[in-house]
Length: 239
Image (tube, rainbow, N blue to C red):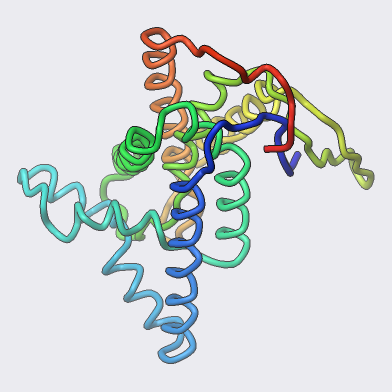
């Protein structure tokens, strides 16, 4: 199931969502340049320097060094991606669901929420595998937090998705609760399947997705309880 767009209008232009997407694209262009000039080894060094390396982050947290390169790497890692599919997939989800969450939170609050969600996601992955030397890169954790918030704020919003049924596929509108619930269950299944497995060759940081999603749901639930949504928003349009 691949979401393509949602039918959920926004009241304000999603400045921050587009800015984050643009920043990730620029960072990826930089990665391509580094790889073109220095090969995969140079790209690996870039990931080690600007990614979130669990073993380094664990040591920094234990020592209380919260402003080290290891901890700052949690933030810079959110703009790096491991390939075209990684980038395109993340940016697609951010574009579809991020604009409405930004609209619901407000720009300043959304910016804080996005980065805090990414930090919580990284910590969740580090907690599972604190001694891993493999750098974590990608906006997936912060985007997972955004998905969790969307699920709380707009569970009945219609999402146009490409649904695969074996060798066949069809376009259909599905409630957000089904699309995002299905995504989260997949992360749980895959995450549980990785427990105890070696991370020496890298892979998908499923517990970053899980931690970010849960954090996003919790924050959105608190905001929704304190600040019920008012005004227009039940009509439909392409988001």
